[in-house]
Length: 240
Image (cartoon, rainbow, N blue to C red; front, side, top):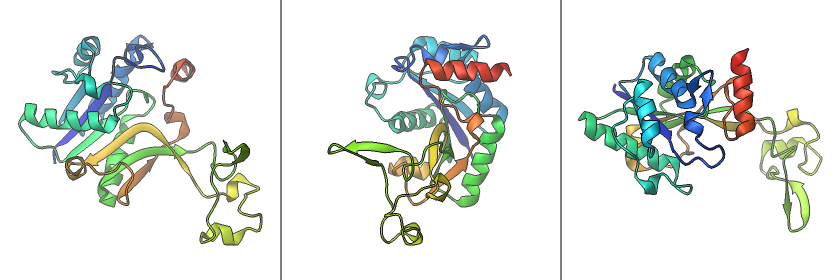
């Protein structure tokens, strides 16, 4: 049951320049994800995909394999990360001359996950016989209750239940919920762990499909570093 770990790190991050190599406790950000992958002890190979020679060299020193540079067409702002993962998967099969049954992608922007999260997510994936798995956390905001949008000059709740939904038959407030606890349960994709079967990658399935499984993580391990504030928050939490 060969398992590949992919770690994707572009050199041209827009939200936070040089994100992958920003230092936290004197270690580059990408180092934490590489070490979590290694310490989980479930991977046959840990491979970094990047378009940056500097990130590639740091990745190798941190214990990962990184022998190629990602093509520019897969490293721009408009390219889906899933395409980069697929590219890394097939490059790895060619390089190691073997097929991998599963691919687990770990995002470098989630350094607060731990090796147990990776192992538990994979166990859940296998138990549910899913085509793929994404990690999530409980959402702080709910589109049925306190997320709004401006549409045609009117402010309105983002999402309402349909007449056929059980929830709509249980409330008499014209489908508006007066308490967040009463609204349908929603989750945030926390950009931490993605698991794919080989079949998923070959068939180019949609990330969200009827065979997708969810792994729930606590919010304190679900911070996704998108900007400087997120980075400062993670640095603070890591000091505690």
